Length: 263
Image (cartoon, rainbow, N blue to C red; front, top):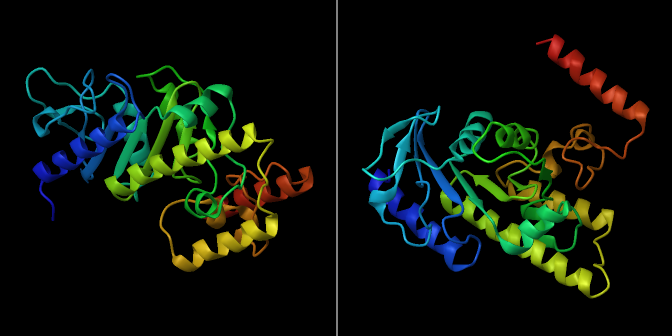
């Protein structure tokens, strides 16, 4: 088992990566790692993520209260957002928040990353919704993010940035990298006259490949109510399936209520 000092070094390395890649500026962004159910390591507030050393890293409990922090350092002001992810996604062991240029541009423009334009993005991310705007350091952002935690492993934050989470720190970082690459490709293709999207049949085949690989995390391929019923799942629905008819929506809601009542 990796000791805490090694985890702190990993956090510093990932912080340097997101800084060097221009995913954060100045003191922006934050990173956290779950040690156990009540202990978490996180980056401090007011510090550039590109110049951290292990003694910068703070330890907090599940409520975000400080367990240990060296003089001059205190946990990120966004720790509430991280704690909400850990609370509602027990499978998550690391969270990365950054402001990657292209992805944040889409978040500011209010455009979710839902267009199926390349196989890797469809398999790895499915799509990336936008969580409604919330005031930083308040419960507004955790509340907004909460709506998407059971269907996705990455979300855009309206007028703010992006959030990714996974079962390891490296995987959470890779998801952030994938979100930015997806956003950049989508932006470029729009400048070239608009992307040629993959067909529904092609998307469904990619979803099936993901299921065959047994990939971890949350993804529309596994969570769409249609897929659960043995029907083709819908890309970008996030479990909401907003393009279904009203009758289908009512039927689905009724089914879920009955299931809950029977528990």
